[in-house]
Image (cartoon, rainbow, N blue to C red):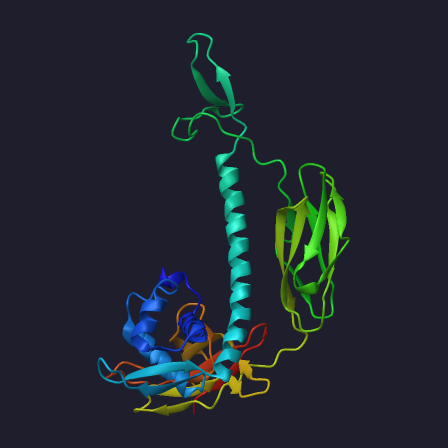
Length: 343
């Protein structure tokens, strides 16, 4: 469903399609459907293409056809390629978070389906079996599935914390746990080195693990624990940069009798190397003369993952605005927001 996709997921989808090959808008709409649930909104695709072209990420040209009218063909630019690669890094983090979510959901589901039920034979009716809990009595058939509930997996390796985080100057540290004794080998993604590279898990004795980064600037990665050739645990890790450049917010310009506000957000600098500053979160409020919020104009929790661009918000026609607009924006890992208030 579209509401479960990352914010502005349409942009990297279009850039990826154009990296595969240049194409017309109509064909891009058709090729987009397997990746992006846009409810058939071709108009949204064309608006996104025009926005990408205004920012120099794609270019277009009119090409004549022998079988019909000329059609506009879109091409990916070098700046668009750089932005795509930056967005892929952000999507990789989203994928890591989603994988962690699914792993934890699977563990909860397995725990709910597993119990200390045992299969017993009723001597009064030969061949009849039912499931009885040691302490909770007989469980109804619709709760016991086919009548046999298996014990939880005995080789499940878990990590504490589930996602390892650290600062830029701190080592990544975590502990691996398991219900049975197991010898594991460890490997880390992206050239990072796990220490120790082999260890033995003992029940009740968490095994400490540290990860050394391959180079400064690495922000995300994954530790895998293997039993033989089988991956039995996969732990994402995240590095918070030591210093974060605050997100840029331009002056707030108000027009239409105070009903509309416009401002620039983020930064885009053509390379080499091309630099793209995105906003992780933005909150737009109406505030009184003392700076107290009177009304929020964004979704609860704010707008998320915004590319550098000019943004605008317009109050409904006929509504009189007696307050000022205030923007608060955060770059990824920025603690205090960049704040701008209209005059």
